Image 1 (cartoon, rainbow, N blue to C red):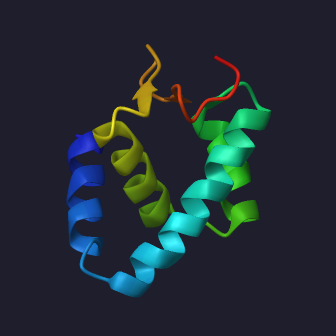
Image 2: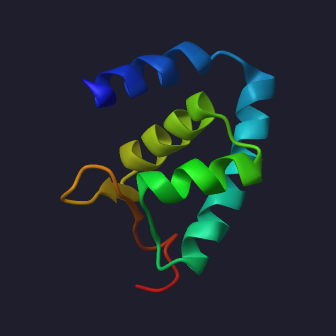
Amino acid sequence: MLRLLATCLAIALLPFTAFAGDLQAKKEALIAVMNEIDCKMTTPEADVKMPELGITRPEAVAIANELLAAGHAKFGEDEETLIILSPICETE
């Protein structure tokens, strides 16, 4: 259900070009932070880190969906931990 909602939100936001450009910068900032914390981010960590990075929940969902679709991320077994993969994870 959560993934379906995330997918719907991401699709709804894709047409906004300004959003997409800003989203790219936020995605890069998120990847940098995730590389600092062993390429994993739990939901509680995201609740703290995302606002620090200026990333809203819809933007976080869009970023996660983009990373998942590109094969650059996966969810952990708990389905609450986002894990970035090589080549964007620099610790693998």
